[in-house]
Image (cartoon, rainbow, N blue to C red):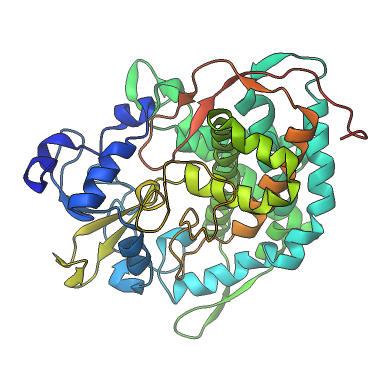
Length: 427
């Protein structure tokens, strides 16, 4: 395919396509001919944007700092016409929508819950919970892997870290689905296909829940992240010291709950699919459990749970030979960069022995590298260890139901046959 025909062959703003498949062959064409390409307007998108598909250029873009801004311009987390209303910089915005130095100050607050020490403190707890989740199958032989198993451990973990009672985690699950499923028919009002069924009420309920949770943490402090945030002091750019206001605390809560569980849920689900597609790798891991750490890295590369993030150029710049004007949008497409043959041998093969494995599933470095990366890796290690040992005959028996969304590489449902559950002590 020549560069001149790309515009008529590729539309990466078509959510219906992503609900059916991940278009890796299109990514291959783009990388080969135009690793940074000006995506034209489409029926789904009211403005052109720059699409970056090579590992090298995505990594370079991540290290360009505020020249490619998270917080400048509308639609910062969408593409083209799929926008989030513009907001002013400063207090009252979500951390992922900020640039340094604001981002750095906010990040320091949240990072207290994700230090290596805090993550390792959870390891025994994670192992116990993983076995309890499998025990909860309680004799069932078939089910939905996403609902029954993949969603549970990330929800339990984020509830534990944030300080939400475990009995409320189903509410977190519903709020997450409402947030990430806003473009998916399963979660929409069928009388108004552009309106999520419960999104306005869920957003309100989530905000009220966060407010009540913060008030409780102020009255009765606990050893959890929301307690720390409720009592945190923030030094702003002008040197003034202030507390987080109610809006900022609610936004932190939303970010932690949604981002903290849906990405790991999808990585777990994609991981099971990868092992089903490449059963030799599952057998290799059974024989060599010491490969679990590298297997997790490969699951993350192969799945890329976040498809892309978008930036806005704050000044004229050059990237990969492309001249990008101030104000233009740049989409960094991680699902493409993680299959780049210049970096990964046989990139469409799932290989748990792959080393080195410089995947960009958590971003390409720089200020916005995922805070929860170490926690997510530990969750995947612990969960797959339990899954392989206790459900040795688990089998995918139906077609995965994919999320209709551009940004989240999600799977909503996965029919499976569980087979016999091995005793935890024997495992």
